[in-house]
Amino acid sequence: MDPLEILTDLENVVPFFQPIFSADEHRVIGYEVLGRYVSKNAVYSLGPFFQDDQIPDEYKFEVDQLLLKQSLEKALELDEDVYIFLNRTADILMYENGETFLNELLSYEKKGMKLGRIVIEISEQNYKGDLDQFDHLLQYYRTYGIKIAIAKIDSNSNFFDRIGQLEPDILKINLQILKSSINGVAFNDVLYSLSLLARKIGAALLFENIEQDYQLQFAWKNGGRYFQGYFLSEPNADFIHRNFMKEKLKEKFHEFISYEKKKLGLFYEKAEFFQLKVQELVLKNKKTSYEELFQSLMKEMDQIAFRLYVCDEDGFQKSPNFFKGENGWLIQNEYVHKNWSWRPYFLENIIKMRNERKGILSDLYSDIETGETTRTFSYPINDNDFLFMDLSYQYLFEHDELL
Image (cartoon, rainbow, N blue to C red; front, side, top):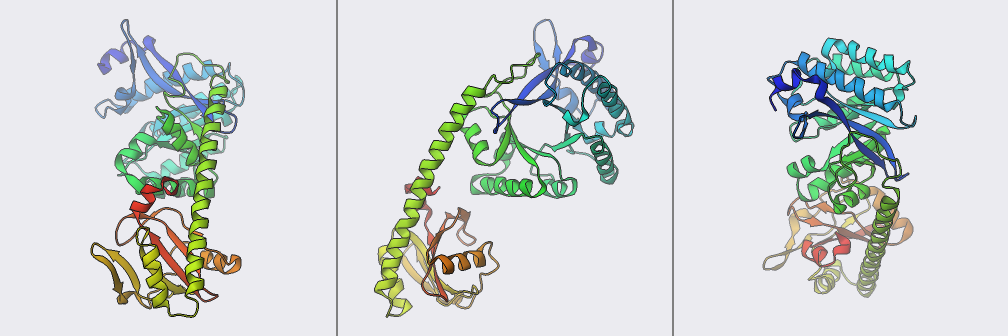
């Protein structure tokens, strides 16, 4: 679309509304406002218009304000607990120091629109202005009850730093962008970190661009509270019934829950298998040296583990690494006396194993040295010494309940 054509034909600039659904109620909890240009032949997204750096901010702001008025006027007919999500870049939000935008919101508050229903989705991509002033503006908006969502995750942003500084109400995660820049276990690790961070600051996770069943399941499994995408509902010129997807979502989540319960059941069965097998070998070698214990373990776990070692309760390694290389098992004496207490959950797991007299199967992680996806089974040999057994990716792959 020619930007000039849009600017000279603002009568055909209209808002579309894409529903946002909740995991807890299975119904519409809000709408994201999306700009559209309606011509005689088609409906065009205004995304390229707003992303075009050649178009002056004042023209973008004019179109934004037009969409704002139209969407808020229409939103007056919605239930009072339905949110309106408004996209704003940092540059446009700072236009005229943000006062014109706020005054428009306040004018609709007088008509009955509670400002606590307004969610500003901010993107700082390519913003060259003063971040302190921008942060001050956002905090000023918050005094009116306006909520803040951070969007636009990409590999070039200081996303985690900004989350900590702004403490937004919502973190919006674009699955397509995040997946394209981060692969494999690292992708899951980033989502896990976001989930922990969101919980710490009291923010909700909103997953967007959900276009297929498995993406909805992925978002649900990774702590998503809100969901948005073409799989659920396309943007429309009109609002939809709040319970439009209620039964389907209820059915889908029941499928997800059943699958996860089954997978967790198999996971704990596998953990119990390791518990019994290792316990048996430890008892058989109770009066022998650790070297003989390792010989038994290497024989029994040859197709399962790729690393074995023993640490004391403070994390100091008491044995060499017994490492399975391409040509069989190797002894790596250089690891004796190294300390691993700095690893996340190490000491917590030591105390747990000691108190419960039972082994622990860790979560998935990438091994520092090999780069392989692995899990570690840890087992209390006695009150002071603990066995660690790293499982090979090949074994995990063959037992997908462990992935």
